[in-house]
Length: 513
Image (cartoon, helix red, strand yellow):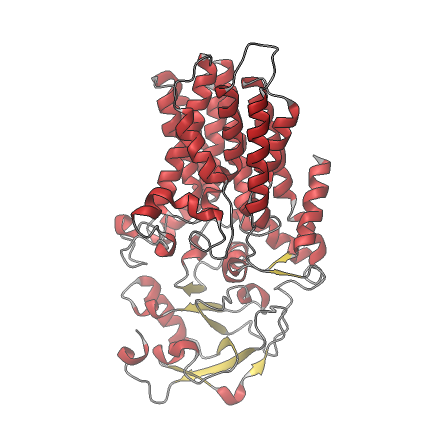
């Protein structure tokens, strides 16, 4: 484990310190807001503000410890990658207990699982998909051990507890509760085998996410606020189901063969280009694993069925609800595992004969193909020798002021945690004019506070970025703007400007689309 940690830390430093869009938008804001009790002080039309902040706490703690030196932060942020490698090692040991396979083949497949495009691309980042995927992988390992030992209760319950805990930390990982649950039902359709997993998943979900769901319900009248508001009808949000449709398949061919499009670098299912063929091969293996292979034991057949059905159903749920590749990252990691398991089942011989030459050759060919075609994504990196985003010097003391930023590009949510703690922080968006309590509260904050500042990249216009200041009857005092010293290299200049009531506010229909 220490070796994994050293390799992951070195890899994270080699890639560079994380500087992704979400980090600047909410990965620093959310834990800061939790620790500073900002429920009443801040308001904005930012969906991500309402995600469970627990996964972001480690990074926030690290940059508070080392705000002026990203090297220790970047190295320690590689730990989730080491944990994933260790969990995958446990899974391949479990595979060896299900199917007698040579160590070199297991090592080769383990290496492919550890080096998927997005697995590598997320090393050292704040997305937290790796850390939550680690929990999912432990859950899969527990379920597989239960299948091997004929245990329908204890080990599967531990596995589903992990699945529930993963969902509580990151709601998108609900895929890895529903998918495994349906796969378990199709593998062991007996009541005594189902209820322990259901209870354990609920317990895991409540342990990591229950407190957050309760807070959202008490504050915003919805436990999943602002998501699925077409069902919960919270008065704090418009009644829609918040999701990003940009990555949905376009046309019948993409709906049917989407994973095969990812062999070449593109942005179909990611914000930045990447290329990886693991999931496409894993889904083909899942379909083939449902075939009644001869010479396979009952326990081996159940293992193949569970993994295959979990892969297929989780993918279909992902395709319908998200279509953002990062959200199904465990499938990338598990695909080489299922490919090797299928190869072992298809070529299973009498004990003592070892793996056939065809399995060796096919494994080497697949490995070579994946190594050649894999292209990790890059969501933004900076030198670890630099300062963190919290290293901001403001010419204005904002501790008694309201600070406004524009929601969207460029993301500036981190400024709430970086500036001298503002009395109020507003992330402005045109939707704050909607007839919701969020909009009413934001408009009241903007109108009632006399000491107000807008922080924006230059060049500055009086109506604010995209006319947002004028939209709320405000105007930036351009002649009084001052430069903010920031380590955010994506912004050549960052200005803080006093706000005043607009002397001739334009009609909202002209500036508030």
